[in-house]
Image (cartoon, rainbow, N blue to C red):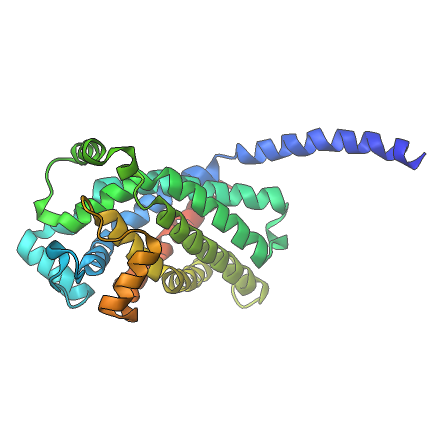
Length: 308
């Protein structure tokens, strides 16, 4: 008797659950707000990202083009690039970077918020484990889709004033010379990095914000958003920098491959340049991720409040 009573309830609940999940995924606001906030943050911090890329590709023993140590640090890199290549060179690769954020940032935030609502109905019931799982999934999905724009951005940043043609010209050039695989070069590293970054940063922001508000000392204010975004930027930089160095070098190489894969790149870098080479560009990476996340979350939170 009990089975016959509960069975109809189960049957009616399943379609309702599927339908409600479908409605959650159709919520366009996190996607749009995430994309707008990502583009804004990228424009504000791009020269720091350029310096980070240049620092990461230099000093490669097996590549004559990038063997020389030209930059002593982030500020020296930015000053030398501006002096030798012109101020516009500090924004080399900005077009694919904005395109990347418009796609990667949009999908990342939209899927992260959607996955959270699928697992937990109310934000106050979220746990660190739930947010980490959602962050990893959204990072892998969004970075895999946006990988070609990441390859374009890194190539244009590394070449500086030697770059030939427009963004589309370089896109076509990579496709003609290296095929589809060239556009998705380093995709596994990109997905791994995104899984680490998003799986650390977004949960760190959410958990920090949640505890600051629950403590009673700070409300849902701009100061809470600022502090939470600072924490998530530092956490993301510490977790992701080694993968970021390897990803940058794999994406930038062409022709005869200097590195045969992720592990080979790590071992060669460690053997020839020391362990700390895996943390090359850490300070510009952190100084970029910190302001980037601050600009991003302040913009995102304001857009969210306006459209609540």
